[in-house]
Image 1 (cartoon, rainbow, N blue to C red):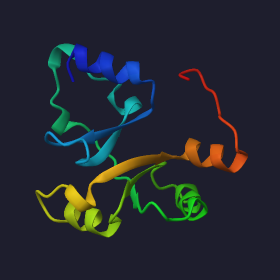
Image 2 (spheres, helix red, strand yellow):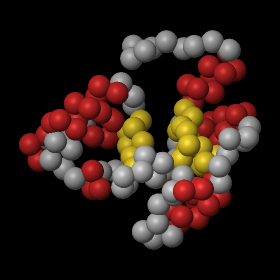
Image 3 (tube, rainbow, N blue to C red):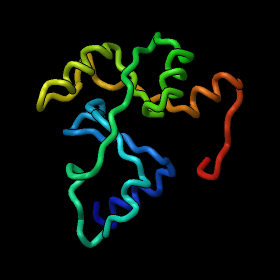
Image 4 (cartoon, rainbow, N blue to C red):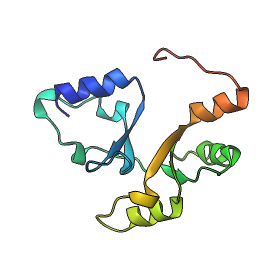
Length: 129
């Protein structure tokens, strides 16, 4: 994470940032917490591959938001990746060296804030919106 990359991450305004490998943005595998990177020194240009990653929940487009909310409340990640075939995405990640792509690639991201907005049927505006 050199200075330019850190500026890009900060400019996003999110506390969690998905990370993908390779040229396809659908090859999202994990995410980073911005707060975990606070002590990095830009001059060190720490490789992204050596950062602390978090595993998301994988869900399908038709999965229940209430079930996902329950998972989030259990203390699991507050970010889920949506795949047309979430079971294939989980299997690919469980296999060493494979990343979800093609049919199992990420087609969207759902956060706790997204679920709350759906329940309230209105936008939640925060300092980065």
